[in-house]
Image (cartoon, rainbow, N blue to C red; front, side):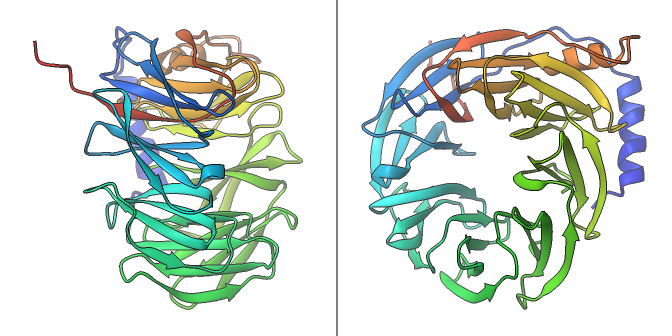
Length: 379
């Protein structure tokens, strides 16, 4: 883990030498789940045009990309189905039935697989990336949400019963069930997998649990009711929620709250741009804006008007663009991250605005997206 002081010193030095660069496209597609249209909108990130709308037979709610192959997986919860999408042919190549209904889907690096939490029956279902077929099924107590880490652990939480199931994905079993004093509304594994952080919405707090024993390490009060978690490469945890126009910054490695930063009106979904300087991007659905906080100074860098009801933010792998899905206006706003640096350097300190790079219509009620690399067809 890099110390915060060393990270900031290196970032400032790198930022001092940066100049303006010409915008280039990204060699890939952004696959957008349009819930109301029951489609995947495919945006070509090389020219920022809608390439195709792939029809599905159920409403998608989440999309993840295969890190090694040009394909994506889309989850339709009400149908209990995962769709495999080929990024070269832009078509559905496989429908994978995981249950009668499903709740969430996450990519797990170890073992390399997509995991889906199903409600009927209640289980974690594995889809190995090597064959993209339904694999192991791990029965778990009825859950509402789940999380996975990089080391082969998972946790499934039940809000109403205040309980957690801690799961070994490698061994395919529930290792222990933990009763929690507060509602486990959100989940986040620390980078080393040794602790699990749960956001407790009604109690406005965070509980840190030891994964090996299931015991509570500490409980930290919050100034807001947590609704969204977001983390960066250094495992800083950012929290937004009800009751405050701000984002709370937590250091899981030290089990402490660092500070609370203003982030526009009622911040919701978040994403981190890992450049130098880095930015925390927070969507403000009520005002149709995205607020960018400078990771060097933890101050306001810029505010960008993006569209009606932004609800999802994704940063391209090259850290050049932020892609913002607007649920009400049905489009994707494209922010060039270098424009935030220009706004940050404005002399007017009270309000810094940055312009959009592009806007792409994608479909009705876009709720999730993933960036998939593609290889140009041979000439």
